[in-house]
Length: 515
Image (cartoon, rainbow, N blue to C red; front, side, top):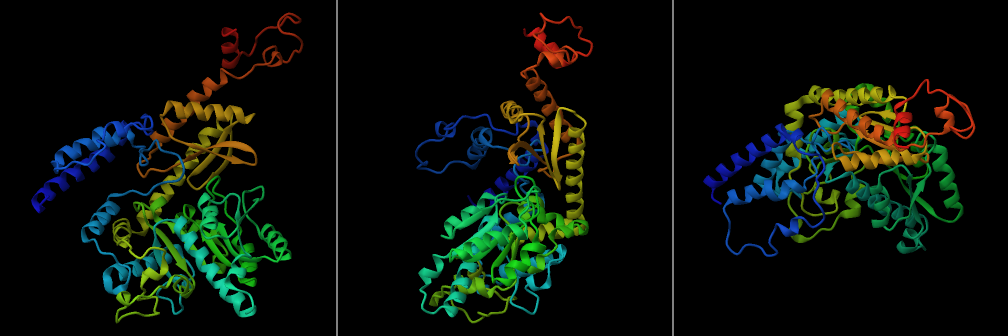
């Protein structure tokens, strides 16, 4: 493909993307294909001779799209949002076009310095403590990771290295292996699965502490677990607190956890992957009270802040701990501008891989084209839509709302979990909307999240009407007791009692007509 063909093809692709977004409601949110569908449509061998780009583009619609779950559809209400916007797409196009691999300052000064600057911008927008910013006088700073999963893992490894060196200084007779074998980490049983995975990958037991009745990890819960482990000769090393848990968007108590961690030299990492985006609004910042105690703090711009995946903002109070843990210097990596100054970092020391993309470009485009006010308006709108959905659910006496937090509503059918499970299975079989479930204190709930930036009130009503329609079908399967039909009279119905149906419901009518 030469530059002229690229111009033509590129314009075609841009038109395709714009048409896709404009008409995404016309596509079923869930794919209906069966496993292995694509293997029958794509040849087992690569083509020997190159094909025309028009042929490949035709296959995008014919081969790829049938197997796509449309994460940006207004009917997508599962998991959490995945960021998407035209400014971010343009930034990604430039990133791919420039193609720099900015692992050190010298390999692309703009790649490094733009990342430093937009991380300073974003930290100020969230009103983070100044110690986290690259422009502060201390060793703190921000870096873009691929995901919150990576951020949690990176900080676990840094905490492991820091604690090992600290204990080694206190107990010089202990080997590094002996120290590392005693290290233990803590998080809530409501934290994301990636936190538990970080413990597995980092060879550090991750204790999943049972949250309180509000789904939070408190200081008391952590202190009790630490006391148990210290009595066993173990060494507490790392704590992951969540602001906005996956199941119910609960907020761990940083004001209680922080002093405990600081007093015991334990690294406190804050995973605010989803809910941290809401801190662009001053009225929600009370939820991160105690953040000054944290050693690291992470927010995914690629969830709720309109930046396409991958773009996860991680700040650390002391980047020296990352550099000490990940620094591998080879002669071919050295350059004349190497520095300990967080304003001129070699970001290869702040992450697991060597190479890194020019992610800050798409973040820069979004921050500049939307502005702070645009991001605030986006978050406010999505919270409003979630509140609206919660009110619709509360109006139906068959349902109970368990939580309404940020853009998430957890709800269920009253009664046994089996009815909520039945409803969810019907919703998935219908395929009109996409949701997932969670468990809250042994109760099965369905999670409704406002995900797409395209979601409007009409889409919320569409989802609620579908849920009600499927709930009607569940009602038809519920067992109806004689007492519920015969105005409270008991006995073997209908032989023992004469009664009149004075308040027959749809459930009763269906039960009678179905025998």
